[in-house]
Image (tube, rainbow, N blue to C red; front, side, top):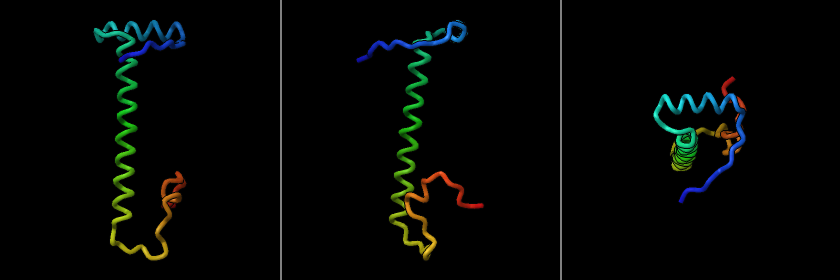
Length: 82
């Protein structure tokens, strides 16, 4: 089921998007839909990759001694290899 969405967009940007859509023989609506689908799919793939990495870490028999970072440290976004 599809739903309608109201989107506020600058007139100039909309004009350029319409030209681009015409050049691609599609609609602005379709371009937005495809963009959002790709964005959601990329995020899903990242989530799956993160979960797989965490599973591998948990199942690993490797010994990092006392230097094994916590899960929070690993995904904190702080640089660890300075």
